[in-house]
Image (cartoon, rainbow, N blue to C red; front, top):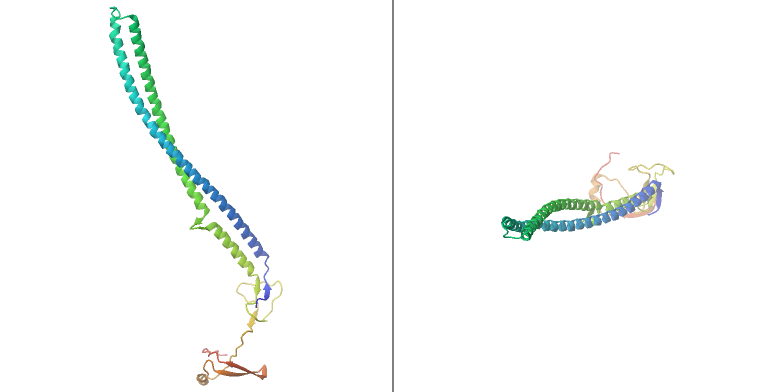
Length: 269
């Protein structure tokens, strides 16, 4: 038992095993790289989320700018109206010499300053509206970037092949190694029990076909005898009954045994 009976050419199976081991090593490297990519994708999502929060804050802040500008415009419009009305009151009084030229010039300057301030405020409002539109567009772009980052993260995590604590890619590569090792082990055909080899008609280099016997092994650990009896005698031969045996190959030797059982099938020959 355990003796080497014959050897199948192991070279193709050794090459297959080496290839499987190389694939296994490459798969581990690939999974490590995919994990790094997934970590980068996760960091990208965190960065995009932070940018989105900052963008939302900017939008909220910019939305107040037109409102503040409207309040400033209303105040400056009141100032301009007051300065305009004051100028309209003092200008007619200049020919009558009820006011001085300096007073009129001062009123004109105040009106011009109020108008300039009002125009600047209106320009600031338009700029605030444009800035708000730009900020909202950037916010929409940031939302799109976040969706893309999340999609990349999901794709990176899926490509790793991790499922319930097991990496399917590594497990498949490792199983391929075990399969190749098993195939290689089949190249050494050893005796499953102690016995004798018969029907030996092969030579070195013969082709072994799957499912076709190469030779026969006779199990010499346990011997048994098949005897023929008439059906009328079978009822007198129970299992376990003692048996005295004499074989034609060794007629002078007495063997002892016991009945194992009866064979109920009959061969015509």
